[in-house]
Every structure is written in C-alpha cells, then in structure tokens.
Image 1 (tube, rainbow, N blue to C red):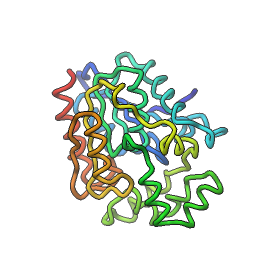
Image 2 (cartoon, rainbow, N blue to C red):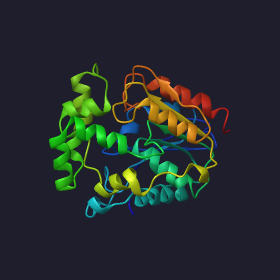
Image 3 (cartoon, rainbow, N blue to C red):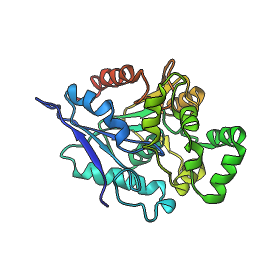
Image 4 (cartoon, rainbow, N blue to C red):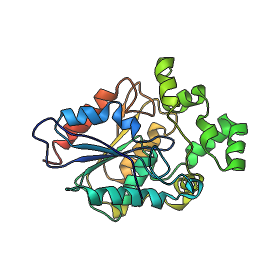
Length: 262
C-alpha cells in the first residue's frame, strides 16, 4: 500500500526515538504539518505523519467505503516497520483508536492519545449527532457517507474548532477535509473497541474542554481504563493540533516525553 508520508527532521542532533503522528477521521497527514511536525522537529524529534489509506495522497480510494479500522492499523504497522527505530505514537480522534488497537499487539516506547475515541467507542457521539442533526444523520446512513456530518464550514466549526477561529483559517482547513469510511465508523461504534488490558505502553491522555465530539467525561473514563489521569486543556475544541492553543498541547507532550524516552 502506497501511503503518503510527511516528514520533518531536526537541523542537528536528532533524538534516537522518532515520532509518528496518526490523524483522525476526515483528516490527513496535512493536519500535523501545520504546526506539530515543524515544532517537534525543532525540539529534536524526527517527526513523521502518515495519511491512512484513502486519505490525502495515499492509495485506497477505490474501496474506501469498505475500509475497516483494522486496515488503518495495518497502515500504521507498515510505516512503523519502515522506520529505523520504533516510534512514539501520537493519535488524534479516530487515530487515537487506531493507535490503541495497534498497541494491543505491538510495543512502542510511548504513546499519546489526543482527543481520542474513548475506550467505549463513539456511541454517545453518534447519539449526539443524531439528536442535533437528524436529517443529516439520516443522509449519512442512507448514503453510507460520513462527509455530510462536516460538509459545510459551519458544521466543521461545530465539530472541530472554537467559535473564535477566523473564518479564513477555518475555510482553509474545511477545504482539506474529506469523506470517511462508513465501516470504520461502525468499527468505532461497536465492532472493534479498544481492549486496555492488552496494552502496556505508557500513555499520555489529553482532551479539550470544549470538544463537541468527545466530551471530557469520556476522555477521563478512557484514562481511568488505563490507570492514569486525563489532562484537559481549557478553551480548546476537538482539533487540538490546529487550535490557537496548539503550542501548549505540544509543550505538554514534550515535557511528558522527557520522562518516558531518551
């Protein structure tokens, strides 16, 4: 499988452990290239972001609707196998569930779940969307396309971004969003929920106080399942790597990594 990779390397003296960033639903590797890749490279990490199959410039569009979450896990495994050292994994939203499923059968030096799909899946998120936008939700299920849920700038802001994000920046991100696999959604809903007892990797679990996709109580429940404590960033929405406060999130990850890896 040909997968798009965006890589940024430090100018001098890279750390021995690289980082692999895994995007969420509707996104691609581009969402990490905005801020996180250059910032983590500046701090010494060889930083990679992949576009999962069917996303960005990766292969897999032909059968995208039938792509399963396990296929995305295979994509992460493929990229990890190509790297000279096992990477730290950072997964956002759906990417957080992909990372969790990967860690059930693979080791990693450390991992960060950023506004991740909770261990109990997307049931409550789905119910909220169905309540708030019943006609759109009906269209999603009739067409087996998730794009209508974020299909306008207003819906994109509602799901991912703070109310004060400038329209010109919001529109730039909106134009890069795409459809998501319906079967992957079903896997996140019921079929492929994470199994925390199978995971031994040290985890940092971060959430956003104003996240409309996964509420703070869901993020905190995920942390409890891994015997740790979630850290919630005030005044932030779901796309924590693109929000105005992205640097505070990145700095917290960097601080935590100092206690976990070389």
